Image (cartoon, rainbow, N blue to C red; front, side, top):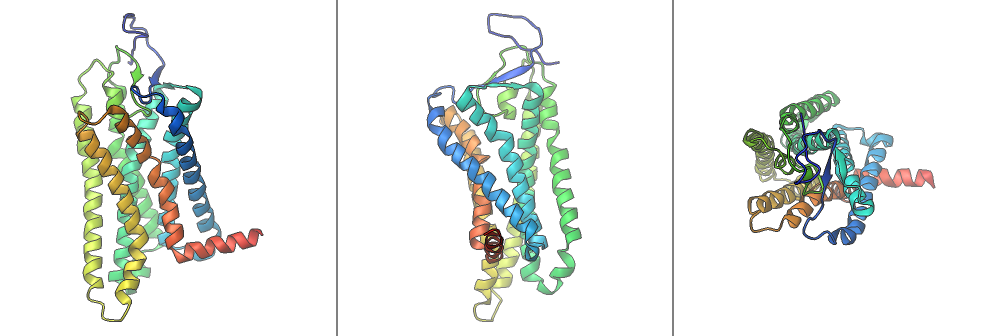
Length: 318
């Protein structure tokens, strides 16, 4: 059962129904300056991903496994953005800091599960490129619509089941102190620190589960690209190597965006004693916004088939 006090001087154990999110506790004036760029990035992320999904849905030439995987990535990006950014903007614009316990733990679950879902999707996309380049004759029989359906089910099930204990463990803690979260989002550790219980098990599980899921995905991505590079270097036809690598360019750029921002967030959290808390909070917010905004743009700009599909749909509407 979760309890909280209304203030440090009031030691009532009456249960409360909400937490209060305090963005940038040391520099709350940042909120006014950040609201405009965050709003623009949010609109860009929503618009670009929606355009990509509509293009893939309506253009018959894009009804292929590779584009279905890209659609899954866009759906994950949209849900992740909608889970985090509207609440952040509501705090910035209308000072709506309260969030119910159930909404807080739901947000925590989505953030913790959808991040490894995205890395797992990148892993499946890397396998798709590996088969296309290293085993092109077998590609149609291996990467089928049925394969994409099974891979999608695996991505959702694996990560939802293995990350579900994180919000569950946090919800079972006893909250008898303040209910003010010094963060823009319901991050696990930010919420757990408010409890009166020992949350070591919670912290250990999140660390082990997170690094196991993300680590295994990135190892498989690295192996896929190692085999791809080795196969490409054996191509003897002129221009074949460049053409093969160009098909992996967009995917590699997206992985680079995702892993770089994730690495920055991890390193700054490790060095949290020397990095201001407000910087950590800002990086956590941007981590849920920048990749969703960039992913569809990179694929739209670099993939000829998607650009052609968008142009065809545009001319049909005119």
